[in-house]
Length: 561
Image 1 (tube, rainbow, N blue to C red):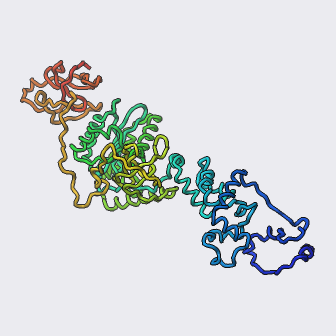
Image 2 (cartoon, one colour):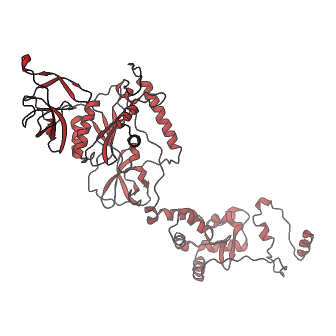
Image 3 (cartoon, rainbow, N blue to C red):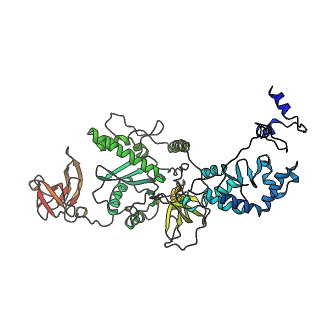
């Protein structure tokens, strides 16, 4: 019945039926309701869709600009007279509209693409600014345009407008994580170590950890964590475990000081600093700090000894294929609170290194599986956006030095030079002006320190093993005024037992009486230590004493214990 009714309604018209495939009938349903011929409209079939586009002022401005635009007028003529059958017959200026020819129409003298106004070329820049009003992102701006305006290439121009917007670029969110960049695995124990400071329960601690063996060394620090204190504690650790070839640390004031640099030059090791404000660049020591603080917290809650827990950690195998940190570092098993048969076995260094590479690759695999982004490397002279770590604002700068992978120096228009990890850097389309830096930028002194030594590599030359002259009264050399200890044992309380001293021969009746216990006031520190008298004066004001650690000194004041 429906088809018969439609047949009766079209009898007044003379037309030719031409078959068109359904996939090409984009407007089949709306066109079936239109009446283009000058005949009386069929009741109920004359349908007109109207939309409110813009204000009268905007409409008049677009109509006026369109009348002066040759491409706009040519497109209107084609739409009014009908599109050519072949694309070769379309004027060159109207070719970008060919693929949308079935959706382009004229409404009140304005060209429309569907329900979107086609904007003349003279008005496009103004419309782009209107689209980006409110500083929305690229996708939001594109969605706004898809509901209102159109011209060829509008979406790419919208994206470029947002990219060129300085306020939008300065306030971009932080960048996602990059693929993990592991450090080179050293070829021998204690070749490369990392150091860091941390605070727990109101006290400061110094931590060193070996990259090869994962062996941790923790030292308690006094209240004043100065660079001199860090140097003194580092000397103690290096004297016990040997001088490493590379020491990696952050850029804290204790490490970034003339005193620590002088210490590195004197002792002959390479001091390498990680990227400022990016502790992840030395994630190994940061993870070790987390583990140490976790053990401290548990020991405090349970009342256990932290040093014993630290020993147990050092004697526990790293995984099912790697030995304990103590065995990897010192080639021997440590005796702990468990009964064990300790045997002397030679390590297989090649298998250890291979396994470490497997663990490193596995860690990289797991890290890179969670939303990482591979970025193009920066080049010298490139203009970039640099994120301020405190405010999150992106600032325009220029790359003036490339130190290592993902570690660069940038120059700001103010003349300030900062060293940053490329995590905080992204490319910019804006050109940064050429400004002379206020400070000189130099490449790292030891770039080779990040590569493992070759089989023929040797230790650093000019290594000074002697300490500088002591400044503390407890460290003075008093061998000229006191007997020299040859053999020393400790009792159950940890106090030294003097079994033999070197000095003038004495008769049996001239052997000294038992050494009295004393309390020493340490000059400059305001604290007491336990000690024993070591001279005939039995600890007088000018007496020489031996502390519980076997140190010979001449204190400023002595009190009877």
